[in-house]
Length: 131
Image (cartoon, rainbow, N blue to C red):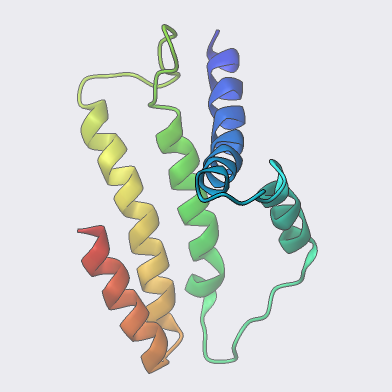
């Protein structure tokens, strides 16, 4: 049951953005993009190589993995339908919030690590909107 819960959660997360984009386009009187267009875009981006600045440290390379990992672990706390969540204990709502905050913190620290004023402004904006 836990594997079914996790699989259903991942499939729903992949389907929702396409459904939202398609619905917005229809309501605006447009045809809209294909339902799975964002999946094609993600596959295209995953085939590209990474470009790193010479001023960044290992924190910049690790931060996206930390952000993705914290979001995936936080997703294990979400119940789907009448199924129990994969991870459940007293205080799991607090752990869920801290895991999401950890991903945001990793991205903010990575932006600050670049040493550019533009990324610093972006990091402060990310911190402001995340609060």
